Image 1 (cartoon, rainbow, N blue to C red):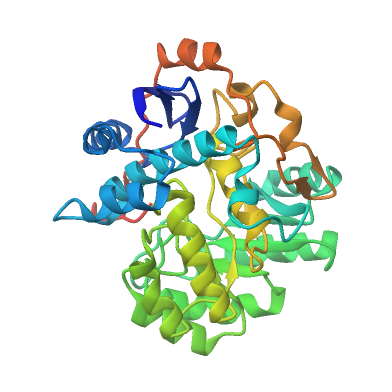
Image 2 (cartoon, rainbow, N blue to C red):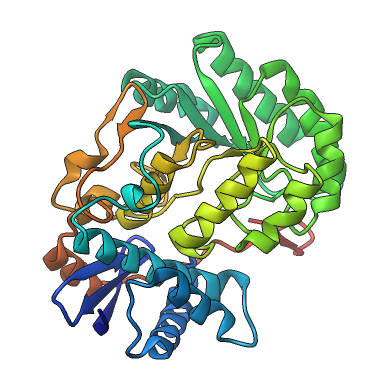
Amino acid sequence: MKIKSFHLYKVPPRWLFLKVETDEGLVGWGEPVVEGRADTVAAAVSELISMIGDKNILEIEDTWNLMYRGGFYRGGPVLMSAIAGIDQALWDIKGKFYNTPIHQLLGGKSRDKMEVYSWVGGDEPEILLDEVQRVYDKGFKTIKINGTGKLRFLDTYQEVDALLNRLKTLRDHFGMTLNIAIDFHGRVHLPMAKILIKELEEYRPIFVEEPLLSENLDSIAELNKRSNIPIALGERLYSRWDFKPVFERKIADIIQPDLSHAGGITECKKIANMAEAYDIALAPHCPLGPIALAACLQLDANAYNATIQEQSLGIHYNETNDLLDYITNSSVFDYENGLVKIPTGPGLGIEVNEEYVKQMATIGHNWHNPIWRHDDNAIAEW
């Protein structure tokens, strides 16, 4: 089976969808995007698909190696995200070819449902309780909040105290019935991270995400030795080779590869298996669209160490369109008591609303992350 044609659709709020058509009439969908670099990734997708040529795309492992190893320069967010979207589409096609969900082709399910968590932002203390209560009433047992705003290497305790006050508010109201994850978003540098991670222990967060940027693995290892709070990272790591030192040096307790950034289903299954050998949990990163989420759930079904799944329904990025807008079988993502059933339809298990995708692609987007500056006008981490 060969690729006959492909189409890329840049759709709001900040996504890029890929449709791959085969010479046998089957269609697969992928979601290759680096948020804020959609056009760059689209160009990389076109280049990579031109490499595939007349190859039999049911041979996914060889096709993946062709895209990855066929280039002298490899890795990084752009190339690995482009590979990821193509890989998702090829798995979708293969599942449809065999009329079975992808997780069956990976070896079958190790679970029927997956716990998901909900983003609530948490930057505005006056509405935090209302935001959390809303998702709590829907059955979510775990929420994630932003940790801090911009922080200098050395800063005042204002942001530290603000976060502690928010956590106290949540614990006073919900007790320990609610799991709280805190995303530092790589905004914090080591001197302030030492302070934060010590102060947070009282409130028992389920994990702290990206306490430092992932290029600072030595410093994250130091934090992990200082704290009893599980550390999660991985959304800005793009291959099993990027994750290798994390495993070997026991730097994190939870890894968060993104199936739209880290080489797709093929690569992330290998990363998950490596993590299991080190007794490290898997919690795929996914503040993206329905195709990316469906790919995550197919891997979650198969990976024994999959623990919890991020999802973007109602997330603050989705101000115009949400992930359910782009599929016709939206019930596939029904959440009950904080769990979602593993999709059982062929391929990814979702039905993309192609007409709506085309309509929204005429609007498109030009999303870029905000640029933050400190008071001295130096660039701050966002």
